[in-house]
Length: 40
Image 1 (cartoon, rainbow, N blue to C red):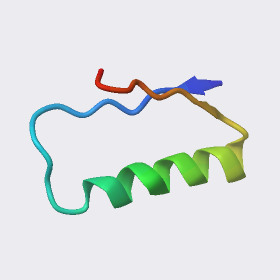
Image 2 (cartoon, rainbow, N blue to C red; image 1 turned 120 degrees about the horizontal axis):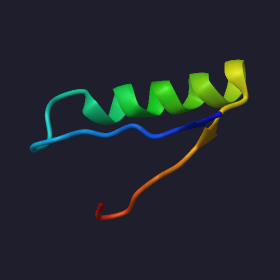
Image 3 (spheres, rainbow, N blue to C red; image 1 turned 45 degrees about the vertical axis):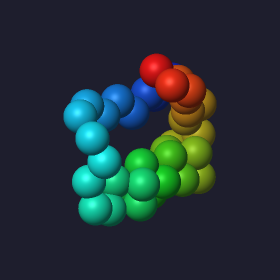
């Protein structure tokens, strides 16, 4: 499965931690392929 995490607007407290947790859990527990968009 391919998963993309999209956010909108500016930064907010804790956003990086949430994205990191989703990515790590997806890879380790579910075997997901995470797709990133730089300067998206």
